[in-house]
Image (cartoon, rainbow, N blue to C red; front, side):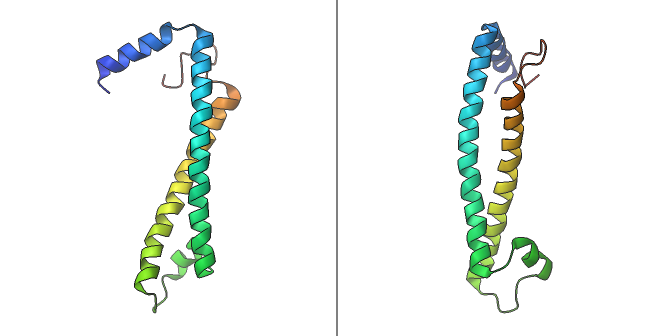
Length: 116
């Protein structure tokens, strides 16, 4: 977003009454957490699927390497397995951050909002 537009949006947001800003952020946080939890569930499900299919964890497979007789499907799965593991980790970190905001509230003293 253009810096001038961003500044105007921030000014407009900050011109709202404090309670309104808190409500907007609270609802936005709740919606975002819901979406992230769904994505995390999907990513974890994909990781579990590969663990069950190959009867090994990704960490163990990384340590041991792919078997010499690994076929094309296993190579493809290995790539997707890493993808979903990275998605799960990234989303989990986002969830943790947003949960802190939701639990502590965004406002501390007279700070405007999380972006500042």
